[in-house]
Length: 168
Image (cartoon, rainbow, N blue to C red; front, side, top):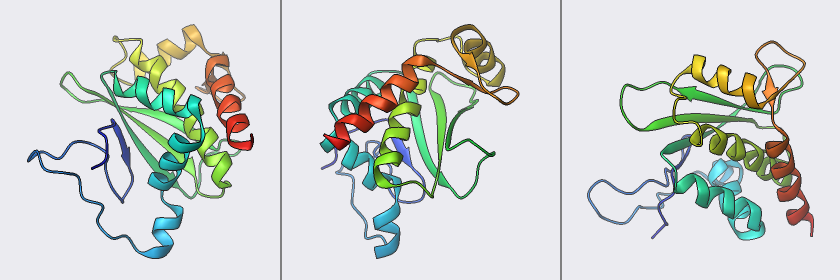
């Protein structure tokens, strides 16, 4: 049985509890997809980085559900991003998009970086839509090189720490 984590993975398997109360099934995935899917990176991150595992546990304790999606392209100079999915009920959803072309270690570190952003959203209960997300990052973030682009030192440090733990 897979432990319940509020992290969803694009196209392969969700780590959410089964609605019927039964165990979550590891359905077969085509060989190539299994080698490259985000679930593999999340599992590697959990095994190889204490910081990554702590980030996942902290997200698990929050009201934020994270969906991780591999994409072939993002804006130039952006390897990953967090988007909020506005929904009309209590639960909050964010989508992390990660480009496909990264090494396994860089992918795990970038997911760790973006999970820190998910925790920043979790700490701000007023963030429920794009406007709230922008206001949060205008307050706590540092502007990036693009319009509506922000980052935080906490996310940068988390990504670096995860990368360091993967190397060591």
